[in-house]
Length: 254
View 1 (spheres, rainbow, N blue to C red):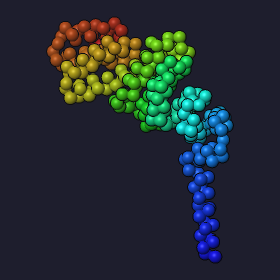
View 2: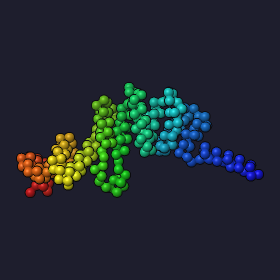
View 3: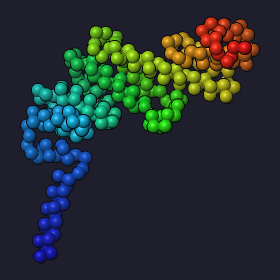
View 4: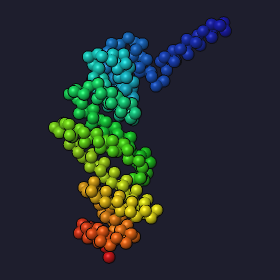
């Protein structure tokens, strides 16, 4: 009797392993049910329509692995990119994008893939604490923001008529502001260390590279103070003149 109970328990355990609540349930169910490519794809699309992008990604990943060269292959990969992005799995999204671009450089939707790479890099750069408690973390590493900027710039240069180009342009301006804030944070760090030459150079870099952002006033103020500390009166006066003309309400103007 005990032996029968042990065997029965083993069956239950196996069933739970195959059909329980593990992260790969959808993939296992799809494969074990012997669904064809179209049926799996329809299940994945249903999951996408209902906002269950984690389930969609599992199904699409299984489909991509099972039919890597099928008629649905390219569309599966594009949907997989979006599902990974919406599910918050940015490493897998970037890996899938890079693979798609590498294998399909002339695909009609290559502009979409590049656009999604920009969005995904922006997502990587988001700071959880900043979003939740509104902390300004402009000093955090902007590598992914720079990558996103390059992605959007590449999209606009290669596909100026793309339907994603206008949004990419807007996002580039947002990223410029983020990068300019980072430069301001670094400049202020240098000022605290009394590295005034480095601080002034950062201020000038902001003016030269991000003139259409709202960080110009701070950049000029950093330059005025740094040049004053360095005793470079001509450079200080030039920076002050520009500051007065553009930002007459600045507290640096006496």
